[in-house]
Length: 245
Image 1: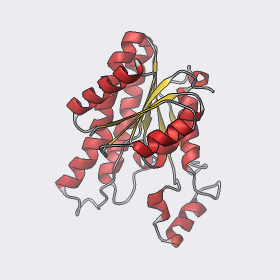
Image 2: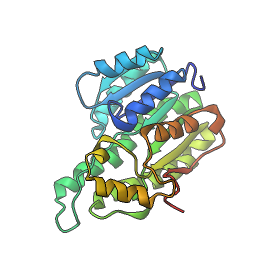
Image 3: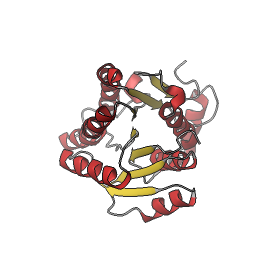
């Protein structure tokens, strides 16, 4: 129960890495607030409660700061505090540079980069008042090395690393740590829909010779959110099976 009595807010928490994190956090004793776009989240609320924890769902578009402010206020009204923020919400709109539209660029930057700024700005105000907090941003190896056809996604994920290190400097003296997680090839639903030869190529490129599982990333979130990571600040934790070696 490493997160007993803590309150965690997880954006993009209905599916994939966010949902896995919500379940892991719930089992570790956290009260979990999930934010996502759909208007209701009955299924995730039920799942978290079945894991023995309290749950709250709020619909919000993180690319819109007024909606993020309303989301933050709703979570504070429900639980009274926010100890942990997991900036997990993200989208892809892939295309090569010459084919990428301005709309594709703007959509990804709005959610994956500006959305993290919005959520952190809103929640950090509360954390600064309390003098403590944990903020974890979901970057990607794409943000470190780039990736074909992902100019927008790579730019946003690289930007998250820069913001993480900046906020670690600014908020560290106020009792708040800010870190990032950079997943490698993870067996999400999107990856599972790819041709098997492509998935196998991903496995072959990874020294661990397997794809990561959502639980691998959720466990990284868990460690950075726990008291065990109190002296880790401004770090980028690669969860990639050794792909960056």
